[in-house]
Image 1 (cartoon, helix red, strand yellow):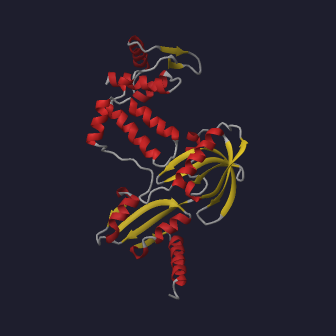
Image 2 (cartoon, rainbow, N blue to C red):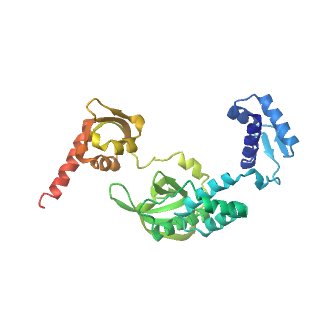
Image 3 (cartoon, rainbow, N blue to C red):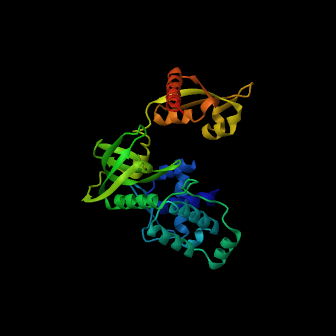
Length: 314
């Protein structure tokens, strides 16, 4: 365990500017004295550790130091390539292609032949089954470049209710969430940070105007995920017919599904009370009965009646 801890500490120090002994002790569940000894061991192995005191004190590896490629295994490089190929499937980005070439160059030629002969055992693709069009890749690449260059961007955005508004934003970055790409940006219309689903954008324009960094990172914005479109949560009790068991277990997770004596499936979940919720519930048609709450059942019934009215003349 010690050698594994020493390697993990080394990799942390290489990836972060400064790490405190207290944080390391808590992460690896050892005493501060053990961390001090680990630092001496790492330093004695030829990896130069520098310590700093004070409120912002901690340990760093000398900035000029780099670890050789031998610490990254063939399997590690395979995993990195799989992840990069998955991102590249959505991004029409020359830099991503160059990065893939650099990573492949780290693999020995014999290992490259082995990789081609055995094939990949993992596929990561951010596109849906119907695939992503050239326009989708172009939008992602354009928005990513706008975030890098801090250039003001405008587009027409359609929300879940079908209402469209022109937005003027300051792009921060892109995020893949579940099954869709989103833009994280400061919205000048709302005067706050927002997330925008890429598929709901149109009339995209990148302007010459640049904006100042507001001091908020992509990671910090991600912690605020779902703040503007989710709506208040609603506790649902749903009963499904046995014939949709597979779909229900995939959609809600086995931990939320209870099989009843009569074979029906009882599901207890909490979802945001928004337009998406009712579309999802209506998708199950007669195979779903909403037990609770009654107002959700009434609203679904109303939507269903509107559908019947629409097709009543056919």
